[in-house]
Every structure is written in C-alpha cells, then in structure tokens.
Image 1: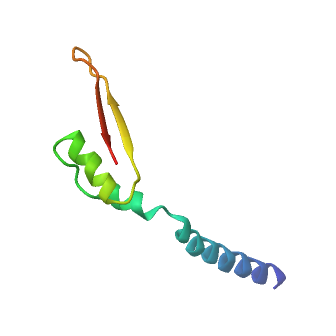
Image 2: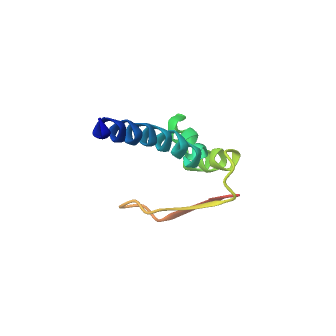
Amino acid sequence: MKKKQLLRIFRIAFIMASISFLWFVPWILVKAWILPLPDTVQEQLNEGIEHGFDGMIVYVDQAGKPPEFYAAG
C-alpha cells in the first residue's frame, strides 16, 4: 500500500514538473524554427529581427567563392 502511494506521488510530481518546464521554453526560437525559410540570407536576418532579436551577424564561407558578411539589427 505504501509503495502505491509513493508511486502515485512521483507520477503527479513528474507531470507537474513537465508542465511547469514549458514556461522556460524559448518560444521565439520555436516560432522561428517552424516558419519556412526566406530565399536569401539577408531576408532571413531581417525576419529574425522582426521576431525580437536585437541583432545578428552571419559569416558565409563557401568553397570557391569569397567570404561574405551579412548583418541586421
């Protein structure tokens, strides 16, 4: 009987902890991750600024092309 009560308490505590941890999820990043990507890097940076980021800098180094910098914010 004691073991069943302890198991029930742990289950309830686990469910309550799981629900309370949803408060700490960075929902801005989840939203940015779900939305489709724009066609260019600069458009994507501008969209990130619209989502609430203060600023971003991106360095792109592709083989056979000169490196490029993109910035927004």
